Length: 75
Image: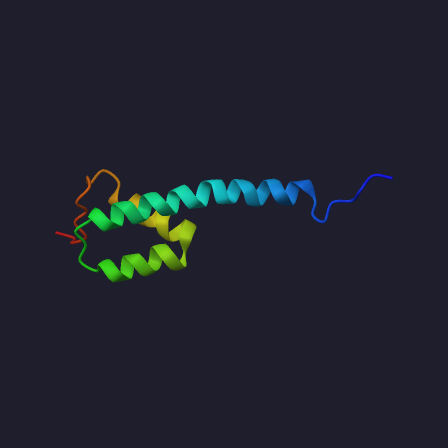
């Protein structure tokens, strides 16, 4: 008799891919946040940490092309 798995294989694959995407995205966003010159740094930190995928992606998209020193002012 073949042993049964506690979770379907598709479930494992989905969560493995999610972690493989989310963790590096979070690390890159935090490293870039640390070097950034932001108007509201604690707000961005909370957004990145509380919404790991959307917050990190949003921060990186906002800072894309601005170099390591991100200027949050809208001048």
